[in-house]
Structure formats: C-alpha cells, structure tokens
Image (cartoon, rainbow, N blue to C red):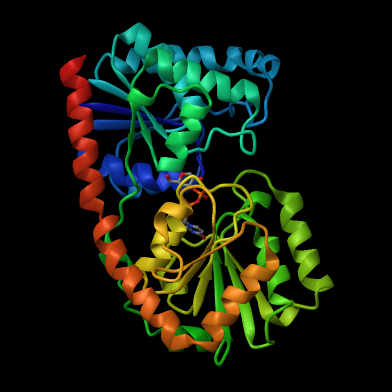
Length: 381
Ligand code: UDP
Ligand code: GLC
C-alpha cells in the first residue's frame, strides 16, 4: 500500500509526532508532504521517512479565520493542490493529518481519484475553531473522506456535534513504544545537575500556549509549600510570544523566580520526566487526546490533568492519576498537595497507570488498527 501523507506544519506538535509513528511502518512506500519547512522535516529525515516540503510561504488560515480570510488564501492553496494531485497519482491513498491538509487533500483526492483519510487531532468546538473553519472541516470530511480517524472519543463527539457523519468515524488512540519511556538515566543525578536536589518537582511538558494553561500551574504553586518547584518543558510553536512574556512576568510578580525553570523544547522528554515527582497537564480548553499524559504514565510518574476532552478517557481519577476541573487553581494545588504529602500513594497510582498505559496505548495496537482501517478503505474504493 502506497500512502501520501499531508501535514501543514513544519513544527513538531503532538499531531506530527503521532504521524511519525503512523508513517514509520510505511516508510518504504510513502511520502509525507509538508506545507511549511521546519524542524519536523528534519525529524522525518532522521527517521528515514521520505519527506517533501511543498510550500515556502506559509498558508495564512488561522484557527479563528473567517470565510473571507479563508477564501483570500485560495491563491496560495491552488499551486499546492495541483502539486499534491500530480503526486497523488503514484499513491493508493491520501492521508490528511491536519485541517489545511484536509482542504488540499480533499480537492486532490477528487482530481486524482484516490480515497481520502482524515486523521482528526482537533476538537472542532468554538473554544478551538471559528464557525467557518468548523463548517469547512465537516463539509469537506463528509463529502470527500472515506474515513475520519478521531484521536479520542471526545474528538469524535465534537466532530459529530459540528455536523460530521458518525459512520465515517473510528477512534484510534495515539500509540507509544514503552521502551522509549523506560528511564535509563540516574534521575537523582540529573536532579542534582539542574539544581533541584531535595525539591518536589512538578513537570509541565507542553508547547507554551494560553490554552495549555501554564499560568494555572504558576498560580497553583503559590498555594504549595516552598519546596514545590516547577519545570516547564516546551516552546511557543505557533507565535505565542506574548504569552511567553506574560508567563515570565508572572513568575516574577508571584515571587516564584527561585521555584520555576523553563527548559524550552526538548527532543526527548523522558529524561526530564524522570526527575519529576508529579506531572501536571493544565489545559483550560478540552484537550483532544493529550500525549503528555500517557507519556508521564509510561515514565512511571504520577499525573494530574484537566478533566475535559480526551484526558477523561486516559485517566481514572484516584486509580491511574488525578483529574481536576480545568482552570481551577485550588483543585490543582490540592492534587499537588496529595502527591507531596503521600508519596507512597502517588507511586502506587503511577505504577498502576504505567502498567495499564503499556498495554492500552502500545504502539502495536495503533499500528494494527491503522493498517486494518487503511486496507478496508482501499478495498472498498
Ligand atoms: N514535546 C516534546 N518536547 C517538548 C515538549 C513537548 O517532544 O519540549 C512533545 C510531548 O512529549 C508530546 C507532544 O510534544 O508528545 C505534545 O503532544 P500533546 O498531545 O501533549 O499536545 P499538543 O501540543 O499536540 O496539543
Ligand atoms: C493534537 C492535539 C493533542 C493530541 C495530538 C495527537 O496536537 O492537540 O491533544 O494529543 O494531536 O493526536
């Protein structure tokens, strides 16, 4: 089976990391076309997955764009659509991994008469997308896609709520190779090296963006004992410079300078997860899936997450982690306090979560489901 994958991003976000895992088994028979250059291209090259960048001018349709702005960018889309359609003749299937990839993939699938699969990594709700963008996504998916893969039941439900057809959808969770999260490093030594010896470390692993809620963790810290410190791993990937400045300002204003460190983007998160006593996920809007939650579990670290979107499907509160109300600083501080005061309990919960995550989110589960679904799409085309 020859697959043409499409992704709009040059940056390494969760959808792109998931795509790396999906494309790997097909690396001898696939091509990933990106609509922007960046570190994602380099990652794919390192992984020996064929990649081609089709645009050097980024397509300016933002998540909150209205219809007119969308139409205004058609001039940028047209040459890419033509290129993708031409390339698609050599492939059995087009696999769109992002919204702009869906727009281009839909038209290309019509021209090249190839089936289209849409992997939906986003919650199509008003919190995340303008009404015009939601309408465009469901209209194109309903009309052109043979299959919509939703990364969680929450994502699937939002797609249907926005007008998407239920019988097009299948839920496939992200898969992970547990070996990558098997912590080899001496975490005590790493803790010493980064000046965190004797501290209770809460880790936050996510791109810096208002809805990822890094500010909520900063506020929660002020309600925790001084020994509780936080590390933030991740960068602003989509131009959220203002938010980054606000975060740094907040650290100073709240008197947290000695209790907070920013590490920027890391190619490998497991070694830093290893130094954490707890990992916090603080999204203020529903998280479509939440890779970091599963990764924390696989590293054997306790995790507290915002109770919305896909996170609810990943954690059973009190059994495999803790769920707290999104944006509720007090509840987050309380969950941190439980782990701080009861490390044995936190460890038992983390071990239970690790055992469950190794099976439930194993890479082979995802690979098998994707292979079966794509074969069905091709057979019925
Ligand atoms: N990540 C990373 N380096 C960092 C911060 C995050 O590799 O410095 C990874 C993280 O481990 C996770 C992904 O980026 O696999 C983010 O995916 P997630 O689903 O949590 O959120 P998204 O950013 O895609 O909404
Ligand atoms: C998107 C979502 C994230 C999800 C990832 C992988 O980036 O924001 O929640 O984990 O895709 O499916």
